[in-house]
Image (cartoon, rainbow, N blue to C red):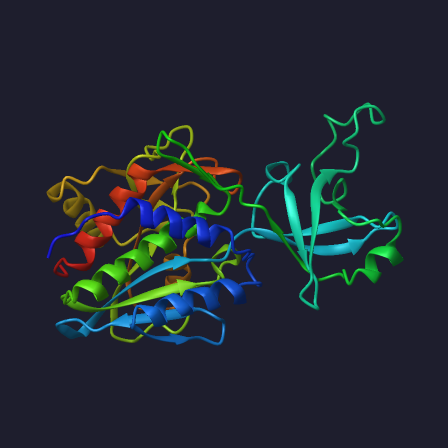
Length: 349
Ligand SMILES: [Zn+2]
């Protein structure tokens, strides 16, 4: 069996994924979309009570299983308060800095299913009125949503159907450049999700037989720490989180290679399994970087914390400016896809 990376198809799927709003806790639409794709691919799956999907492809050896996960949930916010002005205070969903969404267009998802547009702004944005706008803290007090409706008070906003507890999603602003960059919010972790779907598709369409039964766990609660930490089949020996590589000062990861994580805030990943990934990358001439992520946890570490007896590892595309307006390059997606393919076809060590 030979494998060709489908760049166009992967990027177009990724665009579709980032454009479906899915802050953690509000993932029904994206998971319904994922379920439709799995159905089309004729792969067996379950949907958990928490809303995740676990697709399973039976392998030659059905006694030892592998599991790969990527997550579809993203950062977002919730309406914390309807202000007297009719604007909204927000509570964060997931971890980010408010300045990363300042000026971003957003959608408020009301309980009745209405989508109302708005913009996330500092209360004191207007420089012609507020002298100290640039130095004020970007925090829950000063950040607000300007709702794109003719409202001037809290009652007016409430009449639109907006209430405390409504989810707010940020526009992804997806763009693919001629130079091969993909710029968008939520590449974490929809880039990896697209790669996992493409892998399932390749296995199904080519009738490949994998050496071990392999589960593809599409998680929907990673950003809040409890995504892929339940419903792990008991035969699972290896658990791989496919999630973003962290780029910055002192990091080896970049936007062109696949980043293999040796350790993050949760501790070291399984040493031998991580070494195996590095060896596979070397053998297959896959461009990779081995790295440590200082402020990071994954669904694999969440599974370990939850008490599952699995060997865990983490790799994925390098994502620049993570949890903000993110960017990666098609080469990083290709290298990650190649490592995924090499891994699911390798022998367990
Ligand atoms: Zn992630």
